[in-house]
Length: 450
Image 1 (cartoon, rainbow, N blue to C red):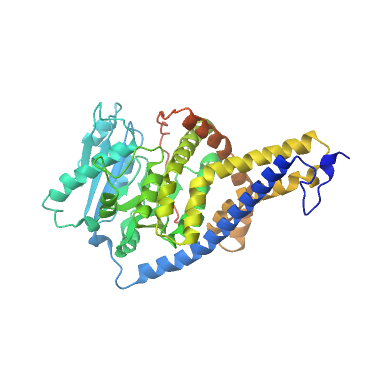
Image 2: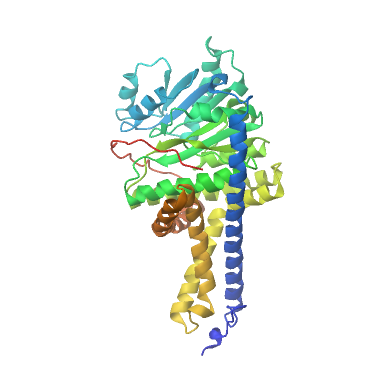
């Protein structure tokens, strides 16, 4: 027996070099705290669900007719999906609405498709070089200026106050549920509510990879976002976010409220919370979008998201200033630290496996705590979300059957986090747009049970 085989059940790392012992203990603490966070958010999600039910049932609840709904669709070479997205926004039930498509310098058939649409609700903002293709934030800021200077000065909308104007971001492949305004409106009866994010679904989820993305968005919405709604700290997503104009104005600069970030949605959500506003998540409505069905474009997309999360660490000052409870502040801190914590636990796992395979220490002497806790932490969110997607014995069986393939999918995140960090450190921030896939016939989507 080597000196490294002297671990015990209460100290499995005894005999290992001190630096590895300390590293493994920290990894265990991180995974335990992550699982504790998950449990707390699941409990808070139930609280939020009851809270939202009371808001919706209140006799004083506001309705969709109490607001002007301005749908913003950033579009760059979206000939495959833009007509579908705009057509579905036409079907959204809102008494007073405007659809603004920001054509950000498209050189495909997108301009022609938009020009062929005859709709009094539709406005097309064309951006040309050198202003075009400066990122999603720049396109959204262009629309924000247009709302202030054109939409709200027109006779049919000038009676609206900035509190009564909601800017709704829908991606060019987005399919917003027609009843979304009526479901979202009650949230804005609270004057502190800045934004509401609806559930995100994947409409081409018939393949394993796109199905896993659908589950992934359910994890984020039904567990993390809904739990944070109880604190008012739910974040905004890139698709299906409803923002109050007066709240956006409160965090805007001369350019506009959105800043040039790879994850501008995360940035705006945290800055709104820092400014004293609240963020909610609505589970009874959804926006569906196109999932990626090949690993290479998915890996590139997640690397971009990961790099955006590394950029977001500069927002720690917003967490310190935010007027939230200590528990909510701790959760916000963990949210910002997520890429670093994920990378650390992944490295600890790899180290444990290498030690177990290359020495005579044995699995039970050191590797098992890291491996077990890593599996529990990565599988836990998926299990909670899968259980929330179904009910009864059948729901439980389906959740357990789907847990392993979804957990394997979740591990794809780790190399993307490492690559995102490498890109951030080396100052690489440019990205090529991911091409849309041809549209397929769509069946009716079910709203997620909560």
